[in-house]
Length: 261
Image 1 (cartoon, rainbow, N blue to C red):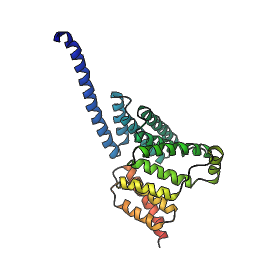
Image 2 (image 1 turned 120 degrees about the vertical axis):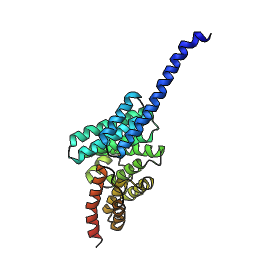
Image 3 (image 1 turned 135 degrees about the vertical axis):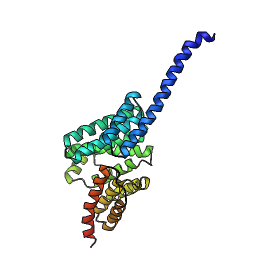
Image 4 (image 1 turned 135 degrees about the horizontal axis):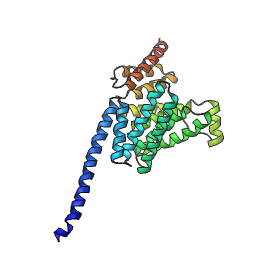
């Protein structure tokens, strides 16, 4: 009887071995890709996650990381004023993040990176389209936070949403009223609260402090702005993006310092 089942057993063990090998490989690739991300090696990070996607497709953990990589590369292109290239990369980020949500609708970071990508795309759109997309951003980021309240990126994004909506022009507010009956309430105070939550979750991330300082600057809360800028001064820049954030912080510092005289 055993002989009869040996071929089937061999096949089963073969597939099990392949599955275990794939899982081990995928975990190693995710770890490597995350390390590249932390070091600011964005292209290497993207290529690593794309390779992981080839080995095990339709994996939400890989999808959101690919979306993150494309978003970061888009930021790099935007910083060099390559707006069209940046937009293409943000659109790819949105595509992968949405694929992640289709695979796992309860994945906080997949929803987050839909918000990140759409938010960046919205910056290049008309006032009417910008208002329309702001609704998408709010829905995605609120879902992300409901799924994981320790998602610092989602809190950061929601803070920027509050600040952005609070700063809408009267024309943009008019579009919101006409097409959506208005937008949900937004304020700089709410922005501050969510930036503070992001800082609490990940205090070493320079951009959380930078955007919090920028918000205090808009509110003319000069001392609080300087407090955040002082924190940034003591944080290590681990990538080109971090160095760019530090440069931006120094520019704000000169303005804030003058206001504190």
